[in-house]
Structures are given as C-alpha cells and as structure tokens.
Image (cartoon, rainbow, N blue to C red; front, side, top):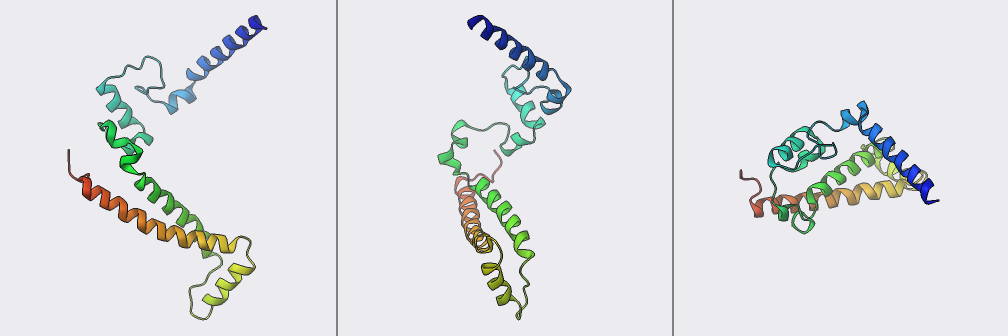
Length: 153
C-alpha cells in the first residue's frame, strides 16, 4: 500500500508539472507571477505581478499590511459592487414583468406578487438591495473621506 501510494503521488506530481508547463497555464499566469517557478519575492516582482494581473488591480502596488485588514476596510467597496450586480440582475428580471405607467403599475405589481414564481422574493431583494447599496456607498465614501484615502501618497 505504501509503495503504491508513492507511485500515485509521483504520477500526480508529474501531471501537475506537465499542466504547469502547458500553454493554458502560461496564458493564465504571466511572467513574474508567484504561481510560476523561479519567482523571487522582491518589490520589483511584486509591482510586476500587480501590473500584469487584472484581479490584483483592486489595490495599489504598495499597501500597508494594516490597510488590507477586514476590520479596516469593512469590505464596503466590495459590498457596494455586489449590491450593484444584485440590483442589475433583479432589475432586468423585474423589467420583464413591470410597466411603469400609472394605469398598469398596480396590476403588474399584484401579478408579480401572486402569479410569478418567486416574484415577491425578487421584488423584495431589489428593494432591500437598493436600500443597502445607498447605505454601503455612503459608509464607503465616509470612510474614504475620513481616512484621506483620496489623497495621493
């Protein structure tokens, strides 16, 4: 069993090495990525990683360690973005069932609440998402102003 386990582990290691050498892996992780072999941790390489990866563009190249903590940022920007996506999706759904005209509005809302599957849920998600987005954007902008994050370093 132990000898067979080593063979399996070696094969898995070989498959992982072959995958990391594939063009797919090369296209996902550009040179200088910490996921590639030969990466050395230096300020220049860290800057290179940030500039070459879209996901890492959320923060500037040099960020103090305490500035990334959850208790410092409170994820207010991310929450605002998530609520924006939620409002977009639920708004598109509601757009198919609701006509914003005086004679049809009440009838459409009543039909949405009674005859559309999960209509009330989607409508309430849209309503509460809008209220929460106003709150999170206000708190986010207040935190940015209070900490002076809008100023250049």
